[in-house]
Amino acid sequence: MKGVADSRPALDRRAESAKAEPDAVFLFCYAGFVLFAIWMALAQLTGAAWTSGRPPGCADSDARSANIWERTKAPHLGRYCDFLADASSKLAGAAPMAAAALDLARQADAMFAGQAAPLVLEGRALCALGRLDDAVHVLELARSRDASALEEPRALFAWARVLARTGRAAEAAEAYRALLPRLSVLSPVERSAAEVEAGLVAMSRGAAGLDEAAAALREGMREARDETQEVAMLALALALDRRGDVGEARALLGERLHGDPRNVVASARGRDVLAVAPPEGGALAALALEANDAPGARDSWQRYLDSAPFGGWAEHARAHLAALGVKSAPPRSSVPASMGRPR
Image (cartoon, rainbow, N blue to C red; front, side, top):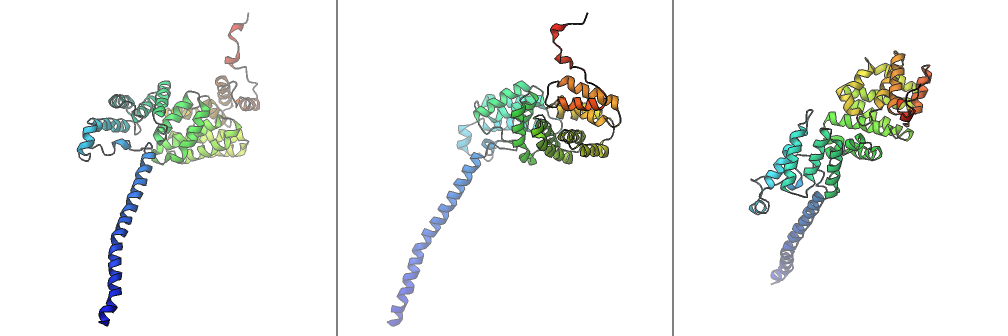
């Protein structure tokens, strides 16, 4: 009897343990459910930053994975998402098919009104086509539909570009500043272009932007593998010279400059990158020509002054012309039309 009595506490403990096991399983499952819910909420909050061809709402739109209920609610979702994916793919690569992407984005927008994703792609296509005012309008509309619509790096790059190319330099500087930490998803060509453009836009702010410009241009020069590298080098030399680091600027040009800098500025890549700050092309060429082609340098500095006679760096250009023995003529744009021709 004593053995039976001694075994009762052990039996009681096992019974209590058996009762506790379902509670522990329940708590474990509940904790897993809570973590999953948190993860899903975060995914929805960050969903606008989609980097593939399909935005978050299209992730499960494939007919093989979408359930019957989802296909019943939105029978055209798969086609809509395919339009977006095709438009995104046509905007990728070195030779984007922007006109085709524009058509696909508009078809997607017509299928599901009120969505931001089609407008983002439409705005990117319009930017690639050079229709800058239209691109600004469409991208602003996308942002009005979804405040985070332009946070995806490629969308943000297009937004920064159209702002800079339409003269909204302060807003463009903010957009490029937000873009630079997110460049990893872009192609090497896009990354280097973004860095050089960011540097050019920062330099347009005057002396306050020179340190920021120099840092971005150094990264662009390191990253680039095409003509963009030479543009970055010329722009970095100009930023250093404007900052007062004349010796470093001359050393950089002496080490890295090969050929006529005017050819770099006039190249397809040069024109594309310099579109965010067109007058700077003359200054880039002028500084680089000073060592070996004084007449060419004088002509390029004067061309710069003609295009930006009242810009923040006009006095810098006039100082270089004076050092070359030239007193710069009044810019053509500063002569009032009412004066007419001298008699």
